[in-house]
Length: 141
Image (cartoon, rainbow, N blue to C red; front, side, top):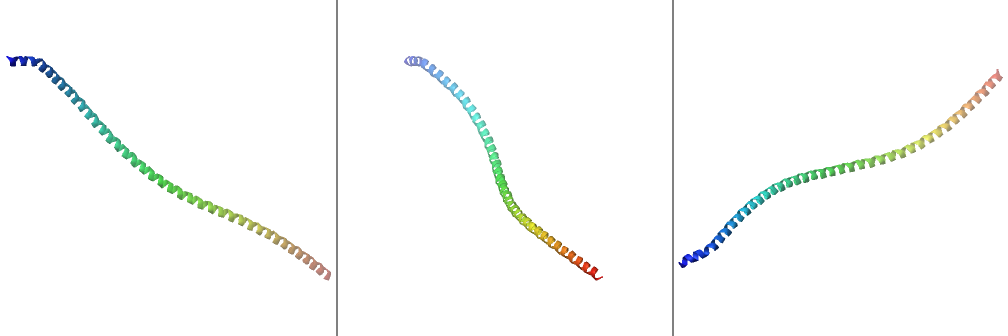
């Protein structure tokens, strides 16, 4: 009888514990679903991260190629600048040479003018001598 009373006294406690247990199981089931959803979300994020890492690697590769291309272009630009500097020096030397040639040409022109004048004077003198010879010849005749 005592045992029966104890069992009857503990029934409400057992019912409460049973409800608490059921409530706990329900809560665990819900948390299991939440955990499964979170695991699914993590898998999606990992997949996205992998995709982004692939994109980053591609962009880094493109950046490296562009950088190498830029270096190549800078080297070509330097070569072109060096060639331009050489051409500028050659042009300057040619310009100075042209000035020198123009001065020499002017001197040759002046010398030619002098020689033409001398030749004219010699020609005038020859004509004078010819006239004198003609006059002498006329006088002799």
